[in-house]
Length: 639
Image: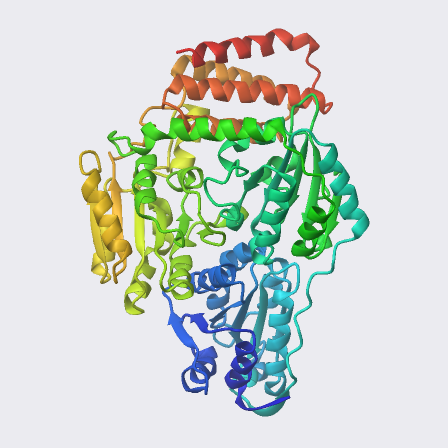
C-alpha cells in the first residue's frame, strides 16, 4: 500500500509510474497543468515531451507502446484538445496498442453553463477505446488511472480514455494506492483447439503461417519462431511481426506472399485480423479454397465473416509452444518452391534498387537505405504511394522495428512515431519514410524533434501528388482533379527553418554521395530531411495515365455492364479495387500502361467469376464477354 498526497496530477502520475511510464506526451493546456507540475517536481520525474498537435502526442504514446511493450501515456486539454486526438486514438484502437489518454475537463460546478471548451468527451471516444469515462473526485484519481492502465494492458490490448474534471485534477486529496497486482494475462488456449489445429497442419500439403503484430506485442516472437522452425512452416510476416524470422531465413516467404497465399491449402493466421490486408481471409485456389485457422489473444478477435477450419484464443506464447509440442514437422516440397520464388523476386528487384531513372524511383531510395541500415534500426512509414514500396523492399532483421499506421491507414503518424522511436531506442538508427502528402499532416513537429534534441532522418518522397488517388482516378475517368500538390515544394527548407537540416536529392549520378549522406546523418545529432525531388505532377513511373485511351473506353464499357448487372452499390468497390491493382502493377512492373491495363482487366474478369461463384451473377450467357476480356488483357500484357 502506497500513500499518495497532493493534487490530482500527483495522484495520476503516481499510478502511471507503476506501469513503467517514463514519458508524458502532451500539448500545453490549462486544464491539465497539475499533471505537468507532478511530472516536473515529482520524486521520479517523467520526461515531458510537448508537441505541436494533439494527435502527434497520441501517436507518440502509441508508438511507445508498440516499441517498448509498455503502455504509452498522452495528456491533452479539454474540448478541441480531445477532439484533435480522435484519429490517433482510433489508430491505436485498430493496432491494439495499450495507450492511456488523460484529458482535462470543464468544471463540474459550471457544467451546462457554457464553460470554455466544455463538451462531454467520453461519448466521442467510447467507440474507439476499451473504456472511456470521467473521474470527478480527487480522492479517486489514482485508483481510476490505475484501472485505466490495467484495462489498456489486458488482452486484447488497446487505448483507454479518462478525463478529469477541473475539481478532480486541481483538488487536493490523500489516498492509499493498493500494491500493484499483476495485469491479467491471456488464458492458456484450449488444448482441444490446439489439437485440431495441429491435425490440420499435419495433413496440409501447402501450409502457410501468417504472423501479425500481436505476436510481437504479446511477447510471443520467440515461441512463434520455435514453432515455425520445428514444424517447417513457411512464414509471411505482417506489421511488427516482420523480423521474427530475420531477412534471409529459409522459411521467410513474405517476398513470395502472393504465390504463397494464392496456392496454399492451409493458412494459419496468428495475431492479425482477417481484414483487407489479408484478403478478408480468402486464400488458396478459387476452385479449392484454402482452409483457414485464426488464432488471437482474446475471443473478440476471432473472425466471424469467413468460415474457419479451426480457431484458438489465449496467450500466444502458450499457443505456439503447445502447437510445436504436438509435432508434425515435415519437409514440404512446397517450402522449397516458395524459397525459389523468394530468390527469383529478389533477383528481379536488383535493377530497380539500383535504378538511375529520372524521376527517381522509390526502389532506388530503398536500395540505398538498405546499404546503411543497422540490424536494430527503426524504420517508420507514413505515406501512401511512396511508402507502399517500403513494405516490399525493407525487411527488418529483428522484430518490433517496423512502424506503419496499420489498418486504419491514417496519414500523419510519422512524426509522432519518430519522436517515440528516438526516446524508446536511443542508440538505434531511426528513419522516417514520409510521403509529401503525409508531410502536410505533421511536418511541423520537426520542431519538436529539434527542441527536444531527438535526431531522426526523414526521407520525403516528393512527387507533388496524392499518388494513391491521382492514378486510380485517371484509370477510372481518364483524368484527375484535386490530386496535385505544389510542384517541387521545398520540404527540406521547412525543416531547416525549424532548426533541423535538409537537402534535395535527385540521385541519378549521385549514388555515392546519397549513400554517404544517409550514413552520416543516421549517426548524427539533428533532425534531418532529404526530399526526393521529381517533375511537377509526375510520378515515379506514372507520368502517363495508367490505361491507354482505347482500353480506357473498353474498361468503361465493362464497368457499365457490371453496374447494370450487379447494382450501383457494388460497382464503386469493384472499380476502385481494379484501379488500385492497375496502379500497383504500374509501380511494381516495368511502368508500361499496357501492363497496368492488362492487370486491371484481369481483376475485372476475375471479379465477374467470383460474383458468379457466390451466386450474385450468372455468366453462361456472357461467356464471350469474359473471354474477350481475358484476350484483351493478354494482348496488352504482351506489349
